[in-house]
Length: 93
Picture (cartoon, rainbow, N blue to C red):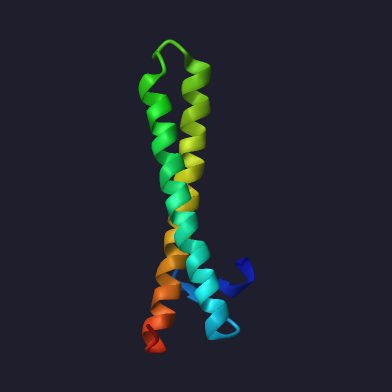
């Protein structure tokens, strides 16, 4: 999926599919990935909430995973915006 996204000099992500059907598959994959990442962020936050403050190792572990998921979510949201922009520019439903 990575090869269909490039980053412009202004920081925006550009989506360039091969064909419309392929764009629909990518769009569906991104929506599923957004849902998955949001669920994982909620899970990690819940683990952090119930972990005793004295357990530094667990807190560091869950915090690190939470940050990783948030970074991936941000990247996936940028890709989603790019795909939506491509659909809007091509006037596709």
